[in-house]
Image (tube, rainbow, N blue to C red; front, side, top):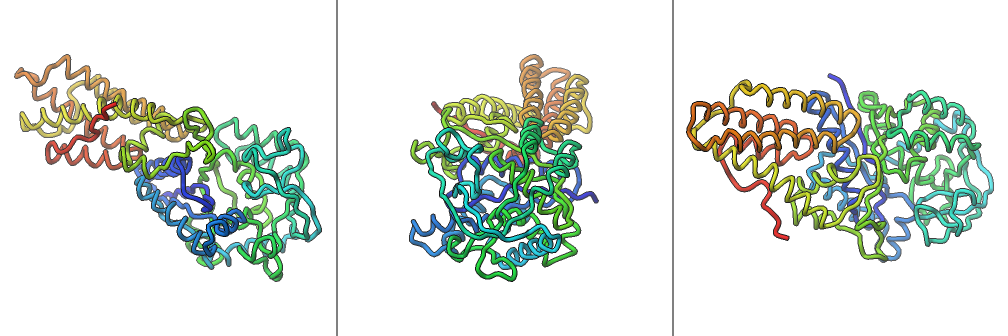
Length: 479
């Protein structure tokens, strides 16, 4: 059986999850479900990035011990996956002792290759990104583009460095030839543009003093802790047994896909493959890079008070409605906007008035004539549409075009609505039974097609086809 190993990015747990995390969890889950539906053995991994300095600072502000702080926030991210009906097979915590052992093994392999050395250093450090920046990488105010308004720290200390500069040409070749595939092409081009500039060696450790004695200890040097991006990226390996369970690791590595946000592209497309090359380990095959979500056309921020709580969304509208909006309305690899008005308009038009209404009408018709689902179509146009949709879903999801796949599925719904109005199957006629049987077969295929996207709705459609009408799938929202 073919295997497919997919990961989300590993979120910092210095605060509660927001809808950007929900988007990524949902996208990764759809891809995982798609490959499961194809009959492949799938492992979907996420986890919690717990060794960051920003976690320590947030815990201090909350006056909570760091371990307790990251444990509580990690639970919220896992809880969000459950709320969204996302099926993580592994959720790897960064503070797990086995992860520490795994990251120390990765360090030792890179060190053995001669790619780690120690030197004194001074630079501008963004705690939000957990990385150093040069002046030409900052905006006109000498601030990080990802965290405007936050002054960078001037850090001066002796650290261990990784010889990133030695991997420039190899990385260019890997990305150009799609041996490390980056989707979409705009992000691939962004990486190649960055690689045109000489790569600088990077600091991969922090003094215990600055790290507040938190994180993974550097092997053979208790005075230093690993740079968070060195250890956090390794969660993709530690979660499947690297350094602890060789058989499981050999089975699943390399990752077939990392699903990440555009803000951490450099770490995944440059730092991570370089670490792996130094260690003599296989590289992930694909990076799928999504954009950000704005709210009412503004960047989400606590100061603006526009951060959307994904738990509240699910509680109010249901998991599948949230999944549907993010997959249909937010471009899969670009920025997209959320507003309650857009959400409720899409919900009422597509879910309540579209899918939900069609299922209710057809199940009611089925009960009236006690018909069963046929084994084949009698209507050739509908049959052709369904088969074309199956092919289009395969193509679209292979290219991570979630909205395109859903557009195609909704063509069946629109066809069925027109078919019902034209054939009037509530009236007795010679073809009444065959018309309803066609509609039932359409619904059974809709349930199959929707499974990766709206898993609970898919189950409910099958149940209603088997057992008859129950509650409305998507009650209309009164606006």
